[in-house]
Image (cartoon, rainbow, N blue to C red; front, side, top):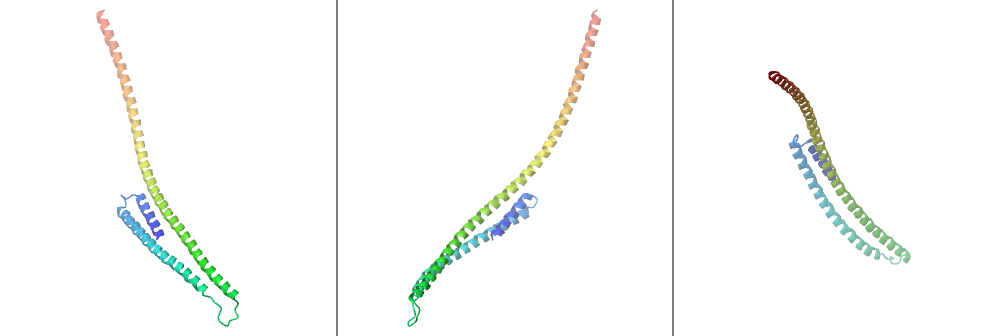
Length: 193
């Protein structure tokens, strides 16, 4: 079920990365499937926790009953079995029960560690998927901004060329004005003379 959630998250991230606008139905479907997978994981976890609690209770009961059973070992009447052999059998049975309980505790501890690892892995996978989606969105925004920047640079170049052309026209007009003023001044002097 954990793999289903991871796969569901990966699908959601991929669809989001490709753009919800392009595939809105796929995005909705992927989100629904991811939600179903998360529900399946939650139900499976509840069942596993319940089974583990029942098994823990059974192991405790087995240990209690097993110890009582081992204590009940006795030498049969009229048998030639030494009492030390009965004691060894009792100790062996009790040791096996202790080892069973210790193994069960180690297993539950490992299972708890594994569960925490899977939860952490799922969290990291989701963050990674979100980071990938954000990265792709940032790359798309960067591409748009780069395109706009290119257009702005071209517009700036065109505007600078137009400004330079207007400046040349203005300089030419000033020179023409200066020549016309000189001519008018020369004509005015010529009339006064």
